Image 1 (cartoon, helix red, strand yellow):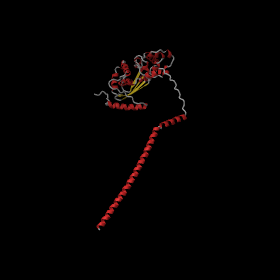
Image 2 (image 1 turned 90 degrees about the horizontal axis):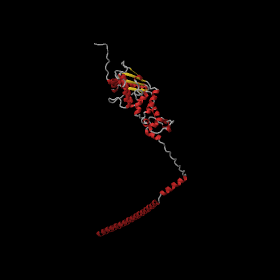
Image 3 (image 1 turned 180 degrees about the vertical axis):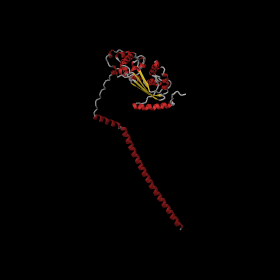
Image 4 (image 1 turned 45 degrees about the horizontal axis):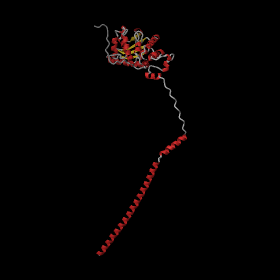
Length: 339
């Protein structure tokens, strides 16, 4: 029996994600940015203080309690294919039975409330050096994430919309995106300051005021009253504690080096000639003379040997001629007797 409801054809989850990812890539290109998917490894959505604090803040409100569990399963399986955080706004694309576009608007923090947070953080500074190195102390983090008057927005400050047909104020796709914000804060906590449109570097300038510097470092601040310490030390959140120590410590003045008198070119040439003459030692000359004498002697010996060999050869040739003549005379005498 049919009640007039038509069910949509089932589409596998992988196909849904693929279709949503292609749509997200094209959408991000139009905005001139890269796709920022929410990737979660394991069951935990967040592992650091900032991500956990955001998730705990969401779960503390009863208005969100019914829909948040479905959102956790969606964000864990990678359905949030793109999530972008800007000043007072969160936009996302979620892969469901169709591709859904999410738009969440969050009220920007008022200037009066931000000033209260700054004064409260400066009063709860445990270590100024940690703050200057970009590391918030426990007291500062607790003050920033305090539920009634911290940086996290209350439900009345959040306005959400989803392109899905669900009539509920917080659908599972919106819940997944809210958890995805916590996953992004887990890796980049500075996005929380961007979302509420406040400058986190003002925490440093507030911390290094004359009154707070003395309490943090344990030094009297009477000499530093009225001074712009931020301009004096060039402090920002990327400054390390080692660089701060080197900047605060007084530098010793070095005495100027004495200039050497210029040496004239003629004096340099004379010194070079002396060095070259010293290099040629008399020992080498004596060795050279000895070698020449020995060579002359060897040549004379070789000449005498050659003359001796020539004379020997001449005498041997004459003796041979005499022997040959005697043999010839003997032969002729023998012939005559035979006749």
